[in-house]
Structures are given as C-alpha cells and as structure tokens.
Image (cartoon, rainbow, N blue to C red; front, side, top):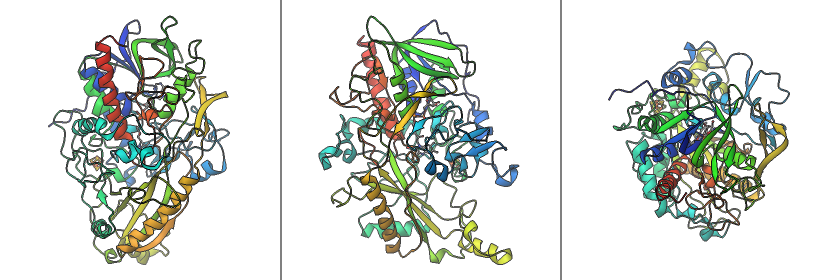
Amino acid sequence: MTLVKTPPPLSQEVDLSKTYDAVVVGSGAAGGMAAHVLTEQGMDVLMLEAGKKFDINQIGQELRSMQWPYDHPRRGDAPPGYHSLSFNEYTVRNPPYAKGSTFKHVMSYVGGWGGSDYVKNILVDEKDHPYTGTKYAWVRARLLGGKTNIWGRLALRLSDYDFKAKTHDGYGEDWPIAYADIEPYYDRVDRYLGISGVKENLPHLPDSLFQRPNKLTSAEVKVRESLKKMGRVLTPYRAGVTTDGLKHNKYRSKCYGRGACDRRPGGCDIHAAFDSPTGLIYPSMDTGHLTLRTNSTAHEVLVDKNTGKARGIGFVDTATGKSLEAKAKVVILAASTLESARLMLLSRSPQYPNGIGNSSGHVGHNFCEHVMGPGVTGLVKEMVGKPPTLDDGRPGGFYIPRFRNLKDKQPDFIRGYGFEGGSGFGIFPGSANGTPGFGAQFKKEVRDHAGAFIGLGGFGEVLARYENYVDLDPDEKDHWGIPTLRFHYQFGDNEKKMCQDMVVAGREMLEAAGIDVIGTDDQILTEGWSIHELGTSRMGTDPKTSVLNQFQQSHDVKNLFVVDGSSHVSASCQNPTWTIMALAWRSCEYLAGEFKKGNL
Ligand SMILES: Cc1cc2nc3c(=O)[nH]c(=O)nc-3n(C[C@H](O)[C@H](O)[C@H](O)COP(=O)(O)OP(=O)(O)OC[C@H]3O[C@@H](n4cnc5c(N)ncnc54)[C@H](O)[C@@H]3O)c2cc1C
Ligand code: SF4
C-alpha cells in the first residue's frame, strides 16, 4: 500500500450561509470520531477547529520523527524566547503561570520532555491561553487533531469495575451504561483504527481486537513471570498503533518499530500511531460530507429563542478576530473536557441563565482525572555489561493493570491504579546524568548500565467529587477576549493514600522478581499532570444530578450533544481516549438515527 501524503483540500472558504445537518466543535479524538460516524451516515457536517491545520507533510516537518539529536541545531530545543513550565513553577505558584514571564512564549511541561522544538507549534502558548484558580498543569494542543497529535497511545478499555463502581464499593454514581453496551463500539474502534496488544482475559481490563503486539524485553518477561505467582499481570503496552496496517486507510502506514515513539513527545510521521486527522478526519472529508474550518474559536452555543433548541455556534476567526456564526440543526461539542465545559458555561441566554444544558448546576463539577508521580526504578543485575539491543524500537513498554480493590478491600483507599513502565536500551541512556566520573571509564560505566534499568510509574483513579470543579473567571480573559476557566480542584485523602501504596507495591513487585530497587519516588505531581481530564458534564439518568443522558445528549436541549471526556461519570484508572471514541461512536450512531426520524 502506498501512503498518501497529500490530504484532501483543507479549504478555508466555508459557506456560512448554509444550515448544516450538524456542527462539531473540536477535531481531536472526540470530534474526529463524531465526524467519521455522522458523515458515514450521510449527514452534512461542519467541523470548527480553533487551531490551525498542518497538512501531512507539514506534520512530518513539525514532528521530524526520525531526526537524530545531532542533526538538530539545538539538540531539539526550541529557539531562544521559548520556555516550558517546570514542576517547581507549577508547585510554588498559582495560575496563570505565564503572567509576568519574561519569555516571549510559555508552554506547558510537555515541552520539556527532550524536544521543545517539536511541540512549540502544537502546545498552546500559555500567554494567549491563561486560566486561574488552584494549581493545575493544563496541557492543551490547539491544532487540527488536538492532543491526538502527541498522545502517548496507551489504549485501554474500561470494565464493569468502572461502569458499575458504585455498585462495587458504594462511592459516587454508576454510569448509565454497562460494559455490554459499549463493547461493540470498542470493537469497531479497534478495527477501524488499529491497536496492538496481547489477550489476557482479565475481567477488570477487557481485551481489545489486537494486532501484532510489541515485544517485551527480557527484564520485562522476568517481571511478568514473577507477577503470575502474585496473581498480577504485566502485559505489552496496549498501543493505539496499527502494527499490521489498515487496508481501508490510505493515510496511515503500519508501525515499522523505528523507535521514534520513545525519543520525544509524540510524533509518528507515518501515522502508524493513531491521530485524528489521518485516522478520522481525512477519510471523513473523502466522503464529501465533511466541511472543515480551522482557525475557528467557538465561544457560544447559539439558541433559538422560540424553541430553546441549539441553532449553531458563535465563533471568532482565530487569526483575524472577526466574529462569525455557523448554523446547524444539531450541535456537537467535542472541544475536550474542560473546553466543552467552558463553552457551555459561556452560553448564557434568557432560556439558560446558568449556561446551556446546566439546569442541574452540574456543568463543570465532578471533575476528575488520574493521579501520578509515584514510581520505582530497578537495576536488573544480569543485564549490566550486556551488548546493546534495539529496545526502543516499539511504541511503548508495558502495562500492569489494576490489582487493588478487585476481590480485596484495601483498608486505606477505594478504587485502584495501574503502572506504566519500560526497560532496556533507549536512544539516550537516562542514567548518564547521574553517573559519576569522566572520560573512558565514565563512558564504559554508562554503556554497561544503559540497558539494565526498569521503571514503573503509577496512574491512579481520582474520585469524582462535586466540590472539584471549574467555573468562569469573572475578570480574566484570553487573547480573544473570551472569559477563561477558574479551577477549584485538589487531590483528596484517597488519592494521597493510593499514591503511598503505589510505592510499596512497586517495590514489592520488582523485589519479588529479584530486581534491585535503586530508587523510589513518592512525589505526587501537580493536579492535571496526567492530561486525562474527565467528568465536567457527567452522564446519568436523573436530570437533577447529571448533565447528559447515556447517549451524551443534553437532558435540557435535545439537539445538543457533548461527546468528549466531559461525560465520564468516574475516571477509572485506565487511560481514557479509547473509551472517549467508543462512546462518541455509540452516541453519534444514536444521533444519526434520531435525526433521520426527525426527533432532534
Ligand atoms: C502528551 C500526551 C500524552 C497522552 N497520552 C495518552 C495515552 O497514552 N492514552 C490516552 O488514552 N490518552 C492520552 N492522552 C490524552 C488524549 O490525548 C486525550 O484523551 C484525547 O486527545 C482527548 O480527545 P478530545 O477530542 O476530547 O480532546 P483534544 O484531543 O484535546 O481535542 C480537542 C480539540 O478541540 C479544539 N478546541 C478547543 N476549544 C475549542 C473552541 N473553543 N473552539 C473550537 N475548537 C476548540 C482544540 O483545539 C482541539 O483540537 C495524552 C495527551 C497528551 C497531550
Ligand atoms: S515506533 Fe512505530 S508508531 Fe512509533 S514512531 Fe516509529 S513507526 Fe511510528
């Protein structure tokens, strides 16, 4: 198969006098999936994306997946004037973090992951996009495809331990769906986008329809074997990457294991890793039913005064600041969990004085995500001095699924956490900076140890709580004059206790495998660090305590849908993107059916 490098024409000349069947706000995982499902059903869709577009070749130039550090003039660093926020900056100050900065451009911490030049046009400039309130490391990517251009690709399913978590432990709310409702849609996402992994038959981490898995290193196999005796599992990274190729998608290649995944934030220039433009948006444009307008920053869902229904979107041209309107019969918000909540709160009208879809007062509330930071590093003694092997030629290392509070009941915390980890040789031996000495002996020391480390980092469920929320700041505005979000959000005791357990359990697992633990980290990273924000417009059966029904349709406004992570009732501990897309598929199929019946 020849990889098509030229996307369909991404015209800016969009007919705004026309009333589209549906307008979708946002082009990331959620918006891309909405466009795919609705255009397949024959609906005429307008997609508004606040950021700019990169065509496939530009993305190649931007990400430069195969560029060696020594071929870059600054080893990957952005030019002078750019600054990536550090953990300390997030910790000692409250947002807006770029306020008063002497740097011309300020990026979130992701820019500091060994290659700020590769994300300087992808991450938002915090100077243009401020927010206020409690500490929160908010990572945003405003461009066609959103965060999917740089996501980590760990693609996991949720189970009934998550959907029916309240039934299991009494806390919070159950989702209005069960695993059986979403399973067929997970299957469709797997087949359409490709996912690699190994079947494990775990009730708490259902298997996908996997393509060829990544290989584990010998150290990882050793831990996997040892964990079996503890009733725990280490499985190859379940990557949202096509390893066997996808015959139906001419914009994506299969993974050649070139190792670039591990070199810097994101960036597969042959699109083996899923991203929304090549995975969903270009194929939708090829149907002839999708119109795309980039540089379109939505600030309001427009309402028909007579019917109370949504009638379109008010937006500004991001480049010119010109105010414009798009008209549609159905409005679909997919601007990401926090931006969709902001849009709903911004959409105040006589009919909806608290913001559209917010009769419950729950928009912005029950905000949740994953807590991370604690982890363990081990030294695999028998690997010291071994000749190098190509271990970073794969899209990820391994995953250890949740093992707490399944059949057992922990005394100190409810819910659970999983570990992401990796081992073996990488492009740059992480241990070099901490190795003492110099000259030939130093180099030998670094080389001998380069492939002998193994690391685990926990990702835990943050409980959804009404008192964790976002609202609009009454004073602060972004570059376009749109009121910004204000955070009222903090980790609680359950998260802190869970983090203590991550360190204990991580040590126990490595030691059981005969691996020396040479470092533990018990520091919890700033709220937001996981980039898995969820739950600001949760689904439910009761319109008084939830915002959306099981099809992500507003209880208040029947032609308004919110198809991103806002709808999640609880965070679970599994990474959310595959679930976001499976839910969006299910909801948009329902939407198209209702639209055809004239019910919207
Ligand atoms: C570095 C990194 C690593 C990650 N790793 C993983 C992982 O391993 N596994 C996992 O499951 N998830 C991961 N994630 C999270 C994943 O990227 C998100 O869950 C996913 O992208 C969410 O999709 P979305 O469509 O809701 O939001 P986004 O992908 O953020 O897309 C939202 C889009 O809406 C646009 N938009 C926002 N506001 C407006 C507006 N007002 N008007 C018009 N358009 C607007 C944005 O520009 C953006 O393009 C990672 C994220 C990052 C950044
Ligand atoms: S390892 Fe595979 S998915 Fe990652 S950048 Fe290389 S080809 Fe793409």
